[in-house]
Length: 295
Length: 295
Image (cartoon, rainbow over all chains, first blue to last red; front, side, top):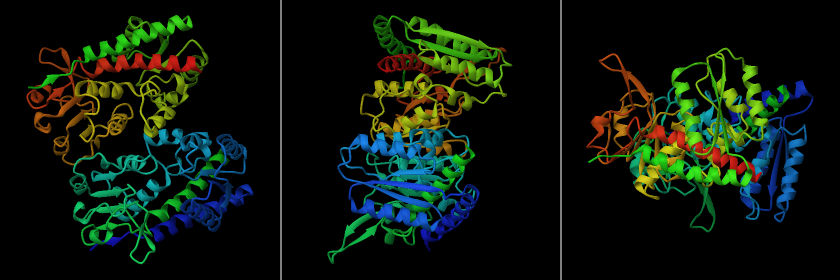
């Protein structure tokens, strides 16, 4: 029997705890924690993501604001907007929605964000802290949201300490998911393998995983027979695929139907990791607000 | 037949190239690149390391200076010394020799070094750049010296591009070697596994490695039958062990005698990775000097 790890339930728990903290913050400081999300242009999926983020912020007692800039905004104007948000004492978290249009350098914009307000956890200073910390503490650090949410679901599902000594395989080596996910699993004492497009015999590598994290962005790439019986599968992919009726549906990076009966646990898509990503963004916003208030 | 990878030869090549650049820097800027090494207390091995570093610096046309502080130096006095070196425009590289006495926090001192002068590559900002860079370029970044030297030997021995798709296993997860080594191998398209003290069946994990990096600090822990026939072995360990005659000798983390005839290549200890560590420190000092001169 394969059990689904319900992202909606886990995310609701994170948001409930975060809301309590956000309300306590507001009571102490006379203002809500505030998350400002910058979006450039009209990419439909990005617009959907950011509206979810600000809507969820409001429901979590966080002041979520959306800053919409035209597709044609220049480098200097975007940097000036980031500088303005850095300087605004009422702004706790700044998120620049990626990807940006081709004429803008995403890393340059990330580097420009005050690390104390970098609720995505992508600034090199926050990445460096994540990779060097003696102890990884999501209350003290700004950790990228998708890996943090994935780790929280693993720990909540398996129990604290249960990751120690397990073989974890992360497929994908992005800065946003693969590499920080590997670091979080390593910090939890997994033996960690990072696989990717150049890996030879990827199915065999995946079959060694007690914990398999798929973060490649390729629809249903991980097949049922790539999964070790009893493995825990975290499916980070969110891929839109066309269906026979001319519409589309969302699938993950794992062929979930094939995984059922083989994996012990799996996160569904939709309704899995994606829900935790937004919840962890709100968590990070409150962590940033509290840290800034402590000074 | 197992071939030895001669660290003396590789290091001499790096130093020769670095010396040419250091001399060109001096000709352009009217001063040599300068490395200041801070040592606290009288730890004999540390004193031997730092005197090698400054001696090698001088032979490479780098102005290497040693700053000796007493074992009892306080936190604030050490921070003040680092601040003085940060502010001195003639200082290009600052190295605080680790480990520090127990009353001093090594990470706090690393965090205090100007990232532009952090020739050890340990500052979170430099670590963050290493783990997020789209392209890892030792001419543009300050990369920890031991992993950088190990990678250079691998690339020089096997040829550029030969690492792609190979299974690399790094035993040890320190900030100084294991984690940055894993990142360098990943950036060279290896499938990378990080193993450590909590790994189950470490011999079996090691036997999967086409490239095996041992960085644990345990004398001759990696046995001959842990090595896949034909694997390339990088032995980062430098361990002093007592001998029957009451003296001592230096051994690595790999049982080298057992590995002979199994591995295709292995770095000896002494005369392997250790030599490259110092050479890469000098390389980093010139990279830092050039970058600072560019402004």
